[in-house]
Image (cartoon, rainbow, N blue to C red; front, side):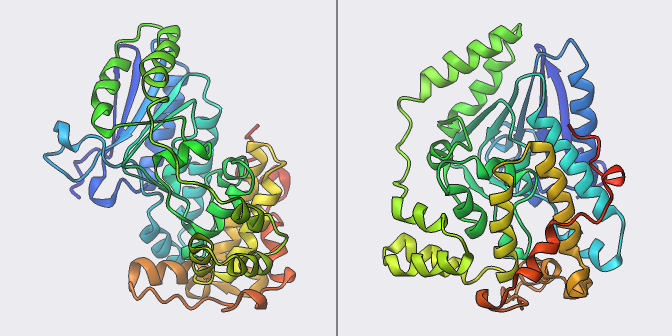
Length: 376
């Protein structure tokens, strides 16, 4: 992509701060400059009385950039994992900066004092999930939502421990461990979106939002133009099996897999098969993450996740970093060599011990030196 392309486009129209993620060829994957631009923009708008609310969307690869057909259709595929791979191998401190700034941005979005409205068409994955945890989230029938990090030897970060653990029942464990992709209706049912609207209606909703002249008008837009118009007619979500929910509430990864395989239903078998393909080490870490996060504040969860991501790339208690890191190996298999055959270590779920898992939750920093010490 040429250097003159603006990857985060911003404008203020009718008192609404408008953000368009504009890296469509990469599915709007987040780079460090994009995160910096988003953070600076939201901080400025937070303190600007002329900005009543914020709306964010992503562009897609269809049509001429900036044309109506190129707007919507894709939100954000997450962090730029190729950058993660390169930075980890080069021991580039920008890797740590990326996560510190990203988690600071995630905290700002979730605690934003003005209405923050996300238009979640197309892919909403990983870091993209962290960009949409504001006041109001519009999914569509084309939404593809997931936290797929266990497939690359990582964990659902960007506050994933916080918002996944607050899904109903044990849906959080299911989504975090399997990385399963869900649609718009399921996202609403699981509490990860607020309404599901037809994709073709997003342009007019984006335009009508800009006609709001006050915060009260924005609230009425949410209640009347969106919820009252679409909530009752939305397609029903796929049935969530109670027995699968019970399985994901079990104490250990091994017991979850065994219970799923014993159930015998097609969804249960599929979930078990997926778990057997994920990083055994990170499955154990993620289960612990979700269980801990359920009783944490957002700020404490993000601090925990900043600790965890440091350990993922520099797993000193297992003498692993660089090419031997579980995360670098997972990215290699998925995005670099694309052989889709990660060499997980350990290779089996039953070979992971508590001594391998617990150090992920020990901070490498003293409290007063933590990169996210100022989050409250």
